[in-house]
Structures are given as structure tokens and as C-alpha cells.
Length: 580
Ligand SMILES: [Zn+2]
Image (cartoon, rainbow, N blue to C red; front, side, top):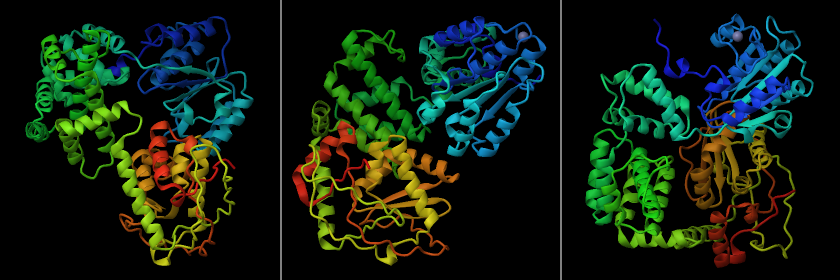
């Protein structure tokens, strides 16, 4: 018999089977009972929370031979065809691989025809946010005048990327993360019905690791039970999932408490030799510190979706640090977690983080920072970078020119503008020296313009404010280059915004592009290949165009910048109004 993955085998068949989404199953059941069936639904929520399953149940509820019924039988011809994906009336489209206009045009053609053997034609569009703008527009036309026999179910993990015009035509259902308790309950049912034996702690670990997604939980159970002979033990789960395990984490915590950096780095080295993942080390250490913090505050870990930990350890290690220290340490670990994503040497990043936790003075500084709104260390860093930038500006003619073909007048904010802004005398600008410039073709520059426009359109103002200070510096088939006047904004873009920007670039060009942002004083890495196409005429000189809309920045980014502006005042940047 063919092997069927657990999550398929245990896919819910009725609204009653849905785990953790009672609010949705109740509303949909009522709608079917009362015959108030919408033409378009938007299911949004994290992965693995039952969106596609619900869509299929709804399709069956509408087309079951004994229906429409909130409890489709699952046995009639219509139900079975929907189950095995052979129904002529239910269409599943994966927008992640069919993003384009053609698919949606096809869809618009077929919508017109009556259902083949059911009552409704149901179109399930998964990951709908991946559709291109043109495809969305085409879809919108259909949603505006849907034939009576058609139901659209749009599923997405990122509802904010679905245009408002589409959203407003859908009934929206938000799927929530499934709780650890609910996942564990479901795992217990599955384990019992399959006749498996499993330790309670093993199921706990899987439920926590699945992070709100039932599908992931069942896949993990699948992996662990495939290897386990006899009982599924906690040790086995830890091995399969690459978990670090309590003992190691306790050792690390002790080393940090004792300020023994060498021991901490030794533990890290041993874990890495053992094939453990850096991210996992940081994650489990921060989870343990979180447990200590919560235990300190409440005296128990129950109802907190945490790994079970022995009271004796929590009592002992709970005395190591006070709440403020724990908060600062967790914050530091989370920073390291974010940093290793782009760090060229992730191991060093983690070592630095551990050293900082072990070093009393650094830890002290971190503790202060957790309480204060502005981190002195970051201010000092910003000051250094800004003075470097100012020196460069003074030393040579400004080399950042406007992107070719934008032609938009820079709207100057009046001198007497609101708080948090500063103006300065214009630095004379001239086109970049040709040697440093990758020839930019009109269509390439268009991508850049579109990127900026898209950021505005999606209301990503902090990112827009950052990128608007950069200058498009060319692109190849796989790479996309942006230059900034200084390293500060380039760093910010690479560190915080790269993932999103690369997603948008792919959305715009239809191909994956690697983003490279660099400050003027560092060479582009790697050096861009010369572009074959004809170079555009050198862009006309323009007023320097650094745009920082402080009001659009989140407070934690705004505060240090404001401080920096105080220090360097009128001589560093020019602030313009981004709203045009
Ligand atoms: Zn049926």
C-alpha cells in the first residue's frame, strides 16, 4: 500500500474536525445551513492552520450529493472526487507557481460555464498574494461580476499583500495559530488511533516545535515515528529535530552566570561539532531564559506553551539573574538571531553574543539599554558612522545623482517644518564618475522606480524612506545594486529590509535577484558585470536627494537618528517631504 503522509491521512473531513478554528467552522456552517453563500472568501493565516483544508471542506459542503450541507458525507461521488482532486468543478490553483495573467485569463474563460456535475464551481487560489499586479486586475474583473454558480476561495499567509480592491470583495476569515494544547490534543488522538506509544514529553516537544501549525506538527510526528522503534521517546524527538537539549542549555546558562566566557564558547564549539545548528542554540537558550523570567514572575510554567523544565532547575537558575537582566539577555539573543541571517560569519556573531552575555560590563550596558529608549552604544556607532560620512562629503564632490529618468522634482520641506526634521544647505551634486557606474538602461531604472513606488503603495514607509536615499547602480540577470552615500543606510537596508526587498524585486521582474546595497566608501561586492546594453545618457545633476521621513520611522529607529541629527545638525542631511 502506498505510503500516505500523516497530515494527508488526518486532513479534517468536516468543519467539526477542524482544530482550533471554531470561530470559522461555526460561521461557515451557519452560512451553508441558511443558504447565504458568499461568492468570494479570503482565508488568511499562518501556514498549516487549516486554510486549504477548510477550502476543501467548503467545496464538499457545497457540492456533496446530500447537500448543500455543513456536514458533507465524504463518501458520495462528488465528495470523493473533491478528496482525490479529480473533481471537474473544483479547481486548485497555486499562485506561487502560476502567478501570471494567462492563468487568470484561462480562469475567466472557464468561470462562465456551468458546473459539470455539482452545484457550484469552486476556485481555490492558494498563496494568492503571489499573483502579479496584472493577474490581480484580471481576477478583480471576475470578482466584480461573478456568475451565480461560482465560489472563489483565496488563501494566503500574507493578507496585507492582497490588494484592498480584492479584499473588499471577499468575506475575510482569519485563521489563528493553533495552540500547543490543541496541537498536542490532536497528536494524542493520532498516536492512539495509529496504535503507537509515545512519551508525553515527546509530543510536547513536537507541539511546541510546530509553532502553531498543525500540518507541521503531523509532519514532525511522521518523521519521528518513522525512525522510532517501539515507544516514541523525548530523546528520539530531540535527535530527529536537532534540538539542543536541556542539559547543554543549563550548562550554557551556568557559564553565563559565572561569567566564564571560555566555558560558554567551549559548549558552543562542542554543540557545533555535534552538528547542531547555531540558530537552534540561540533559540533554545532564549526559550530557557524566557522560562526563568516567567517562572520568576508567576512561580509556574503551566499554560505558557513552554517546554517542561524541572522545578529544581528553574528555582536554582531563576536566582542567577533578575528580571531586567533576563529581558536584556533575551533581547541580545534575538538580535543575534536576526544578525546571523546575513552575517558572513554566523558563528562569530553567536560567539560575540555569548561573550557579551558573559561580560559583566557589556551585560550591564545591555541591561541599561533595555530600560532606556536610546541605546548609547548605538548612538556612539551612529555618531562614528555619521562623522565618517560627513568627512567623505567634505572631502569630495557629492557623487550620488538622481536615478535616470525619474524626473520628479524634489519637493523641499519648508525650513520651518515640524519637529524631528532638519534642513541644510545643498551640497553641489554631479553625476557619478563613469568608472564606478554600471550602465543603467531605461528598463532597468524602471525596475528601481517601480520598486520605490511599490514600497509606497504597500505603505512600507520606513523602508521607502531608507531606499529613497539610495541610488540605483545597475542590475544583472541575478543581482541588483544600490549605492548609498554612506554605509549607515546601506547597512540598515541589508540588515533589516533585504528579504522583503528581494521579494518585491522578484515580484517586479519575475526572477530572483540578489540585493547588494553598499555605502560609497566600500566597493560593490561582488563587482557587477558590465551590462551589454547601451548606456543611458548621464543623469542630469540634481539637488542632493536624501529623504528621511522621521515621522514614518518606528520609534526605535527614530530615536537614535534624532539624536544623531541633534549632534550633526544642519551639516549632514537634508530632509524632504516624501508625500508628493
Ligand atoms: Zn458527499
